[in-house]
Image (tube, rainbow, N blue to C red; front, side):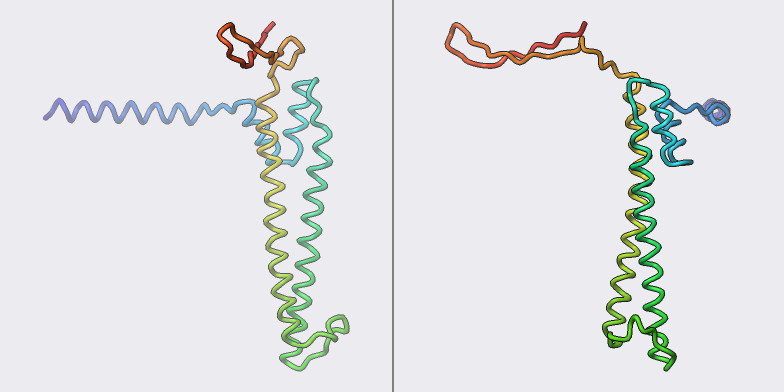
Length: 178
């Protein structure tokens, strides 16, 4: 029993020391750093990947990232402002306040329906903004995996027809790595 207790104490103490040492020396791989850079500043991971591998030009992706973030941000802003205006209009109609001439042609149910519609569009804009942000992070990581990928013309494959002497017909795939 004492042997088992000593063994457990020694094992746990060595495990605790290993985890403390591992926490002190966290090293990120190349693709993790690219993803972290893109998380901090969108597009920075793509620029890092382009600078690391000159034959892969990912600079053209940065304007697309900012266009996506800008478009979804614009829709988020306009939908938020419109739903706030409709909410104020509905509250004014219920409390007998002044009406906005923009929403004057609509009755109370139409204003409430429009409010719900713009509220849903605002929520979709938030999801779109998050999707663009997280997709650009994932793309930076995926691109970083291929920074050192060999794309020389010596890598090739050929697909040729194959005829056997027994009358079988098929295809032969030849891969050449030079």
